[in-house]
Image 1 (cartoon, helix red, strand yellow):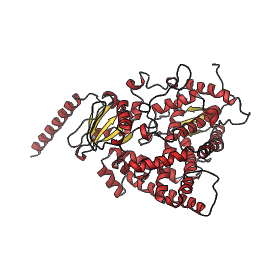
Image 2 (cartoon, rainbow, N blue to C red; image 1 turned 90 degrees about the vertical axis):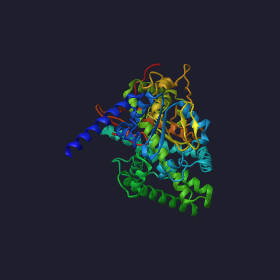
Image 3 (cartoon, rainbow, N blue to C red; image 1 turned 90 degrees about the horizontal axis):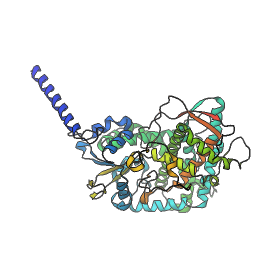
Image 4 (cartoon, one colour; image 1 turned 120 degrees about the vertical axis):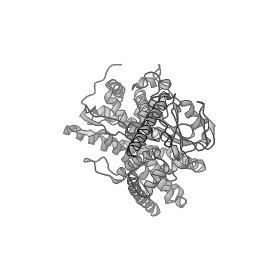
Amino acid sequence: MDWFLGQLLALLCCCCFFYYRHLQSKKACKAEPTEWPLLGHLFGMLANLHHYHDWATVVLAGRRYNFPAQTGLTGVRFFITCDPSNVRHIFTSNFLNYPKGEEYAEIFDILGHGIFNADGESWRSQRAMSQLLMATPRFRSFSARCTRDKVDKSLLPFLAHVADAGARCDLHDVIRRMTFDMTCNLVFGVDPGCLRIGLPVVPVARAMDDVLNATFLRHVFPPACWSLMYRYELGPEKKMAVARRTIDRFAADTIAKRRSDHEVGVKQSSSDMLSSFISSNDDDVSDEFLRDTAINLLFAGRDTTGAALSWFFYLVCKNPRVEQKILDELAPVAATKKPEDMVVFDFSELSNLVYLHAALCECLRLYPPLPFQHKAAIAGDVLPSGHELKAGDKILVYCYSMGRMEGVWGKDCMEFRPERWVTDDGKLRHEPSYKFFAFNAGPRTCLGKDVAFTQMKAVAAAVLWNFAVEAVPGHVVEPKLSVMLHMKNGLAVTVKRRKVPCVHAT
């Protein structure tokens, strides 16, 4: 009997091996995951989690930008794409057929019924309300003041402390702390002081990191699997549950304080979004709405800008030619400043800096803060690429991969070359949003795009003009396994004060 079982096991192994070789030979791309009976592509997706974004890019490049996938017995069908024509169709031409969907709202349940989870009339009303608030001169002035104060009073003094001590720092952590403080001030009217000397632990900031890490895995594991883990608080879902309680407590305490101030007639010196919503809606706005709106804006402001700036400094460290051209562009503006210890640039002074803007766009092309977007099809459809979708199919639009496609951006697509964004007459080159997807496309185009650019310019200009930032040799920088494109190992740098930046004649 033992001999028979041994022979049977050997036969099964041989069958599996030859079946695997047969499937491999039929692939258009060798990196493409094998579709196994019962499991579908799930095994291959899990096996490549350690470098998921780059692996997806190789697969999409080998499959002409599109890859249909399914997760076996779960019956979940995914369509992964970075095809600009499909992106335009999904996000603009046939927008109503591709909402975020119920599954998206379940995956991102931390966002409640906020604008990033909402569809239909709820989304339209929330977007209109946020758009109206963010367009006011009062809010724009408040945003500019918050950013300038944080750069002048926190970021530059912290980097000066690091430089004077001759120490290293994790610039990725520093930037994210700064954007967390700025976003909390804009949304809640509270500065948590994350960027104080000593870098204190802020529970709500750590809780947001735990949420992002667990949320990425929800995109990979079948819903039944992660739902069970969440119910019994197992694995990453245990951290998710604890993190949610921390975030909810922070939001509830802040909302209660703002309502109390409003009721007793305390005049706010600031124009934070939470106070503005309460003042403009009086008793018509619920605590749940305020919580969901504030948390949506907090995640959007902290993580997108923080990730983008981190990758920007990484790329500039690797490309001294680009750094010098930015310094050359800043020089005429800095020359108008009083000779002080540190130079801080105003928003109005940065609006016409074409090359700095181009360098930020180039960074966002290669390292978009949101590496992919999630959609669902309401009804069956045929995409411009010729692929057929069924009702209920899930779509992952991989903007991280789109920026790395030769057919989209040319043979130099992997190079950091801001010049591609500058026209022959020295103006900014416009690229359609379905090709440059960092700020979404169509009716859901990011409302905070202008605010984000002004914040990034202010931070980038101040840091590069006042300090020479160098990456620590041998430090490995790579994307983290998260729904946001954070850095797995951080960005270890040394910082030195600049005496007088060397300016090249142009």
